[in-house]
Length: 250
Image (cartoon, rainbow, N blue to C red; front, top):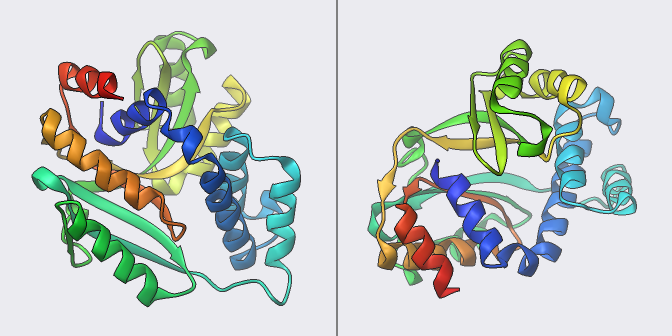
């Protein structure tokens, strides 16, 4: 399983998602506002907004929060956010991509650089680690939606590239430009997904031991807690024993 999925599992086990839930709501609402401001405020006419709303709903963001975020985009006082990607290395040489939305580039750059430095990492230039990832679309369904063969057939018919199934869920990967079409086809066949979004999928990974994973998670958590940071992806790989030991520490 790729690093970003492992990280999500660690967050779930250690209860970090609960701690970050209020921040998550705010970040999802910001994405909705930006998507609506850049295009049509109707999700059916704006693929990016539709995906943003879908992701917000899958994370239990209340309907009124979603509607307010869309309405905010149409107001004259709506903030202007720049979308910026930062790239760097974490402890153990793990590649890290940080996606941010900010109304103050200098503030965000300074904070991200400081966070890397204080947690055993180094912020690099744009492109310094990007080649280790591929931009993809990801659709996630719970295992209960059907067996691996059923989901694989649905994914192939929808135009997806790959499916990774385990005891918890089915992770369907597609080209980034096909995400909206693939998600719509899957929804017609399998129903509402748990998650639909664009991701940075590692095409090479870096193995970490328990000490390395502990240091890395401190960096990733600190980055995630920054209000300007929308999403963080890392290309780490850890053995099941290391994962279990880390979970036990929590």
